[in-house]
Image (tube, rainbow, N blue to C red):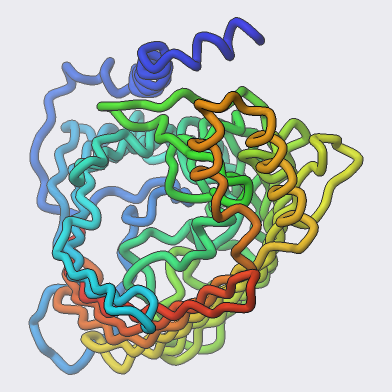
Length: 457
């Protein structure tokens, strides 16, 4: 185990580690390269749904008269002559126009137009409809990385096996694709609690098409593949976070510490498990679920020892809403029998789809750290500064300057979504406020205006 940890700390070894797993997962696809493919205009053949694969099935938008307008932009697909092997090329492009005013009491303003996401993916089936695969590459500026690679095999209607690198099935909200959100982007809550991507395997009964009783159970390596989410403990402790999934400058992986992830839900009347927006505009549907992660070997500087997330999804007559409450616990003094609450938070997003074109959305999120966790983080920081050599003390003082100072963050936004071609081409706008509550009693307020163009193939 120690030799494995030392080798994974080497960036070159890390790249080899990621590519080796990717190649192993794609060996079945490579072996079919001599199969003569033929182009087909039809949509991708159905394949086992998974939490990290939100584009395998398009929801049908509500009809409005007889307007001959397309519901989606189909991706490019090829398949073998017998239809047993398919390969689908997909893409996600999101352009974000942002205007932000940090701290309304000052004159600090920031405006920019940027490529928020640029992703290319390959997905399809092998040897029939039961075995599917997916590989996704991020190519946005400064974000060249492979973010998903996995295989899924449908054993029967109640069991799908999935292995590779993908989002943990911890909570439904984060299992949504970023292109299916009711708001422009993820709230601050996901940065604290996740779910993140890790290498592992799981068994589930089709999270994209929930059964009356829904489950997902998995075992993962505990090493976050990306630096985007589940950063609650590193933020609390003031520790920097690298990006192991980067193909240009990979950071060393954390120490291997397997963790268990599970999610269970009770579903009524077949809700849409891939988004909260109610595209079907049908009768009452709901999903009540609970997710958890258990990491008995978690390092308090970086990882939660336990996370819990009860959630409720409701869809009815064009109205869609998802609410959730999140709890994150850490190992106090790195002792398993001294687990304490570090963070708690909540999210609520709701929208009403007036017709196939227009949706009004609102969102609110809050995260807060506990006093005990803040005090322990501050004490740890002061001890490290005191023990550091003179040449390192100033650097550590700057690094830990804000440790223990932030109490809570609130975000609220109101937005309008325009669907030009179903969910394949849309424009989202929102205006929001962020409130940052500081330990000294100060409340810092930020203004945020966003407009985002999304293209999905």
